[in-house]
Length: 238
Ligand SMILES: Cc1cc2nc3c(=O)[nH]c(=O)nc-3n(C[C@H](O)[C@H](O)[C@H](O)COP(=O)(O)O)c2cc1C
Image 1: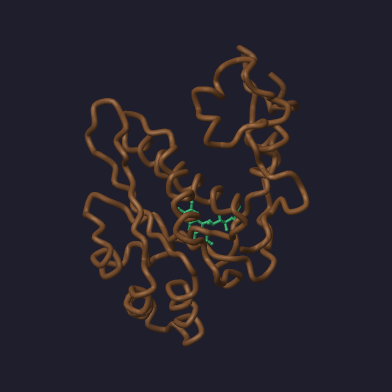
Image 2: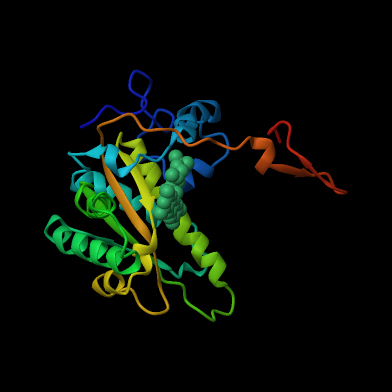
């Protein structure tokens, strides 16, 4: 098991209780929880970052750890409980076939691809210890829940899985690319014509320090509406 990102600091805990004890309902009961302590505990969430496939290696999450990751996705907000997404785990036995599909598709789309580029494509299928295909399956024409909302649900499921992987000390990244619209790849993964292959989520141990993508300033994405106009948020207090 790789070192957890919070190594040396307190493990995330829900107050003095285990996460199992602290279900969503009890956490909502005013006065039952120590909010200041929980606030400290969740600060590690903001440290989530993607880890490139080339920086991932064995071991990946075991079946119990993977179940935690998948169950986190089930907690994604889902208007109408439409479950507009699913995950397909690409087993080790599938990887050679998947790699061939990736490489064949790349060659067809870009006949001038170099051997290095094709090898990188193969690596995307072969290297990750755990590889999950994320399929958005929005229910079109729903009377209350537009497709956009359903895609937001799929995105929330993705983020929950990334966070659950990060929280267990693993590195993860989701990548799409033109392979996601490749007919051969989509057929093999049984992606329907009304569905979208959103990307491949790779999860493994971090074997090389990840490069950090720049984060936007809070003021660039968070605003206050003062009843008259929108202004950049200068402090987040309610
Ligand atoms: C559905 C989805 C597909 C993505 N596909 C790609 C991709 O093909 N190539 C890429 O460089 N980043 C892709 N990204 C972004 C990366 O996963 C990652 O978020 C980005 O490298 C920034 O790193 P960060 O997560 O640490 O901010 C995708 C993100 C999402 C949500």
